[in-house]
Image 1 (cartoon, rainbow, N blue to C red):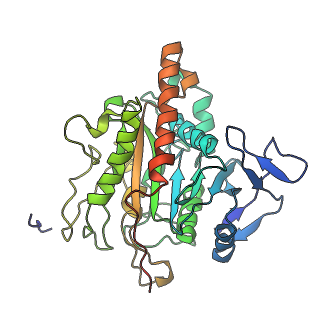
Image 2: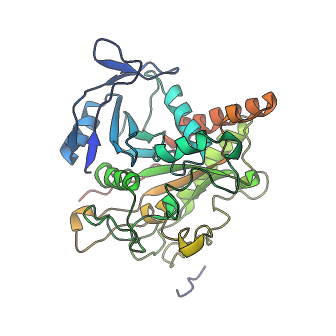
Image 3: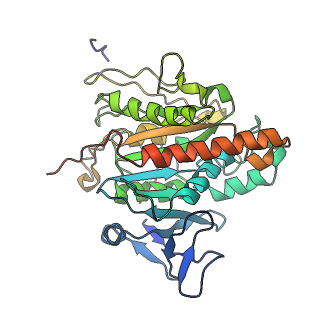
Length: 368
């Protein structure tokens, strides 16, 4: 087919409410990990993060404080390889089900599990926004988008990324449109810059449940030239199939017809070597607040920044998981609805553990 022309991170190994007297914390749930903790905060530089990875201990830490002083928590689990994965929930605080999927994943990872990828899980990137949504459960998932935006007139949190191909500048912290990036997104971008994951899942939820699924952004070089979509698509489809085969609801990938990992609003994926179009319009909001660069577009584009070559990186494989509906199971009134959505929370989380964090379509790491 021919082409057409075309943080500084604040680490605070925080004591949770279930902390034991020996200075270790057990995360509530089925898992039996002990998390190292400390009351002190320090700037997390690459050497310290590498130490965390080298020690390979399950660890909880704090990326920073939200605008209203809440902790933006993260959890690290070791893998058997040198590959790194990142899973992010709660980019949109209105999508509480995405946070539930992340929390469920934390519950089902146990010390007996053998994960191939080292993984950092951020259950709720914007905890302030999620708290707003929790206060109005009857409006969750409605057109008002309660909890989606941080303040009146705010830009969509998932449209605050830097220019594709350019590194995040923590000193200016401006997005592609020249707007100030919110603190929580700055924490995330700092983490990505230092952690350098090969693969990312961004957990979201979708109002039209018929479009629920797992989707892949096509990876490109820094000039938006496609690198090939086959393995990105295959990984997304493998996760979707795992959910469906175990009885989950995931119609957006059209697995019973012609399987697709392309989000329905995004441009078609092109063959390797062709210019890849992107969706910069986002959602329709006044003053173009819904437009801009998404994490999917920025992370899947390689960075080749002449002004800061130390931050140059390869394109990362990034998937978007769109859960059917924004509510938590407990937000539904009927027991059969509660059971249905709880089952799907469990199946979506299990697919991440079984497929995404294991040896499926492994990325190559180039060495100099």
